Image (cartoon, rainbow, N blue to C red; front, side, top):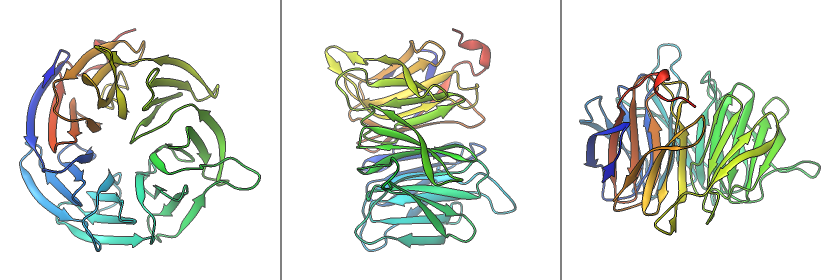
Length: 325
């Protein structure tokens, strides 16, 4: 594995012999959780020492698609939400492994999830083309789906982002990213042209970013207020285009950087989010990068790959002034 500045590789270890599909730092970056295709969540401390294994099997050990930490509220902290291809959603108290809540939909798959910024609700994207929004206290849900007189998903949903109290973004195999207004349970905008293969949307201020499995223009930048794409770029190295699986804005430096991961001769790119130029690239990985997560309050970056490798990078200089347009 090779990386160029401004990133420094600080740790790399084999999390599991299975694919790592989701990695997430908890709100204060003191724990890293990983979710794998063998149905296991592994929890690591700040030094990436293994602390706990959580078996999320209901009846079978099927892949875990996505994990999210609940924003801290009240006295109960370190709650982790999991969406499973077994058709289940689960909540655990991560540091003890105690199961707090589980629910399943037969003949379905829970493919992605995210919490509202306040942590009072969470949204789950399903194979049956529906976004279900759950009250975190009562666990009652409403459905965001295609109606006779409105837009909606027509294929499985692989990525969800809940950036503001009343707005959810979702995307997947139908080539569309929908912006939903939770107050009216309806889409208010559609961004067409992103064929998503994983957790491959993110939002910062008025900007929506996506990366997809296209042969060209995989990276797409959208103006949310204008409802249109404002920039696209082909990520190609040595004649082999990147097949994109994951994308995210950095968090601790005001969204100054974007990470894009997938498969190709270069498996990962760190981009300047102001002008979308490459700052650093990751190569010589032995498997695709399926997931990434920037630290919430630190300069850490974690990535997970298809051969069970988890790597932690650190931003060489973690402040807002390092990356300019």
